[in-house]
Length: 139
Image 1 (cartoon, rainbow, N blue to C red):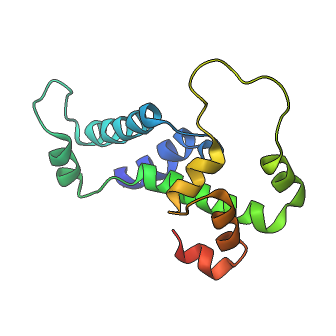
Image 2: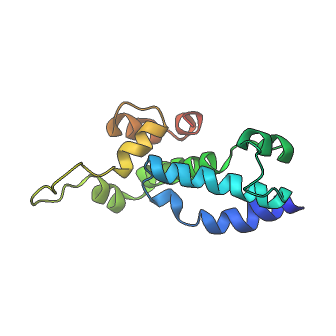
């Protein structure tokens, strides 16, 4: 019962709208830490106890799912958007004129989505997304 509460009440609130955000390495680590923290709380394991994360997941009889759930949500949202919503596709593919910002380029949502589907580029991902059966197999 506790597992169901964590998955459906806590995780749904934590992941609300997260499939629309870009995630860097730091955010992925935070999500993985939150998942481990949730299971530790359920099992009443203190953070000072010297128990590895692998042991926590073994005791909970679970595996890391939170990041996979987020990636699957992004995958389904991108596929639906590319297939059905012309306005949003034009917005995603459009370029903004002006000066480039100083520093490292920001992580782009479409590049991250293409990387998660193992596509070489956005255009390759879009070709696969237009065919619903191929898109579902690309997860």
